[in-house]
Figure 1 (cartoon, rainbow, N blue to C red):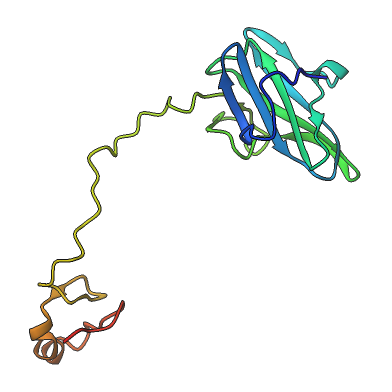
Figure 2: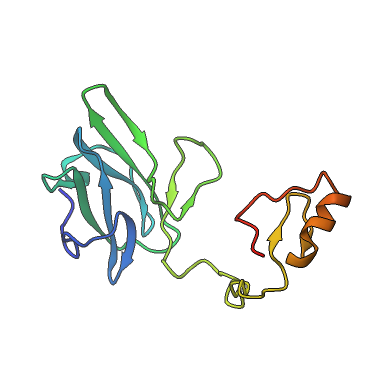
Length: 165
């Protein structure tokens, strides 16, 4: 069975890099066994042997710690159940291999590895009272001009919220 180092009830679902390797946690409540296969630190594991078995914590989660796992390593689960057995990708994977979908490998990635570009995003100021509503045609109009605008543009009907006078 895979080591349980670094795993506890608070271990996040999916694969998480930690010092010395990675923790794995997957939800498979009706499985009789879940194995971790993949390539970790240049070593390929592709057999369903006792040393690849994840531990069942009794609540449907299967957990394990893979020593030497690093960013970019590939992995997938071999799940055994009453209806059969086979490879499953990690539904919480941060990245998937571009080949072999849907039975593709998941790619181990650090939580902060993705270069997000949203630092400058700000929620629009919805307190601006100049505009009362937005129409489905895409125009914005002032509350005082509501009746006149819709009289001239009958195709322009409000689609959200209520009109304020």
